[in-house]
Image 1 (spheres, rainbow, N blue to C red):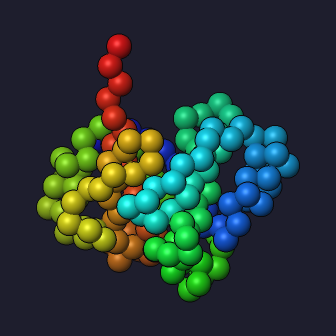
Image 2 (image 1 turned 45 degrees about the vertical axis):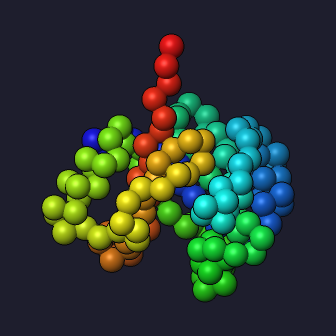
Amino acid sequence: MILGLDHIAVAVPDLEGAVKRWATDLGLTLDGTEDVTLQKTRTAFIAIPAGSAHVELVTPLDGQGPIAAALEKRGPGLHHLCFRTDDIDAEVARLKAKGWSFTSEAPTPGAHGTRVIFVHPKSTGGVLIELAEHPVSTP
């Protein structure tokens, strides 16, 4: 089941400069940065006040990967919307049954220990959507 908006991702060529604009200049909180080597990205998560969603600033790791290609093709800007789910496998099966297609066959590891998968933009009218299942925290 979709639980809500997890983050809005913005592709940026310069992560340090983007963090300054989004966190420092706007007075928002940087929740941290992380390299996601499988996705070939470096990310910074900016908290949005009074909500659980974030802005994810994402840049290519070592100038490679899908974000590098997106920056080259379209330049910096909105990259994708990410929705949080409590059962990514069930959500993928449900959407596949409705004819949706994905950019990969199965979820892969993402930032913060998540499992993620991207819905192909042709299934959503041109918007790249990521589904993310966060690890279950134990008391």
